[in-house]
Image 1 (cartoon, rainbow, N blue to C red):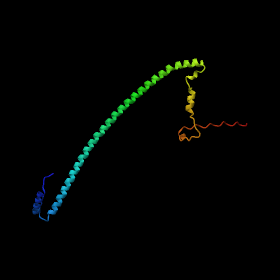
Image 2 (tube, rainbow, N blue to C red):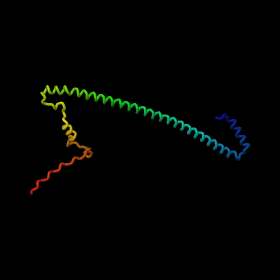
Image 3 (tube, one colour):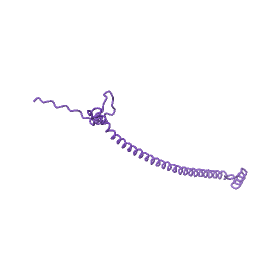
Image 4 (cartoon, rainbow, N blue to C red):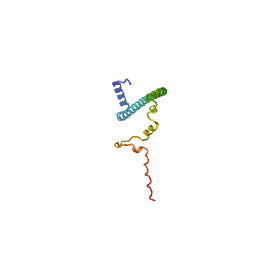
Length: 166
């Protein structure tokens, strides 16, 4: 920092010894050393604070960049999901139309083969069979069901009143 050679420091020390005297020179040197140490610590603290503020500014910019990227990704993902939903709805409508078109020839073929005796082949599961399958799940008595208590309890059948003897 300062360009002071050893000879110059020695000359300053001799002048200080002559001016201050041998009694006060150690006290002044100690005080001067303490002041220089404080100045060095203050400079180091200021440097650390400046570095910390620079890092915080960089981190805030980085955080903002990440948030912007996340918002952009969310927008792209939402648009892709909308596109997939629209494609699924369009394909579903096409499939329903194809199923409706295929229903008539299949019905004619069934009538031609069976002579109209089995009209229920077009709908292999009647509505009441589907309702029964949904209402009464098959339960294996050898299987431990951990979720029995979560299902709504079915009321136990009430025994018929015994006939009275009167």
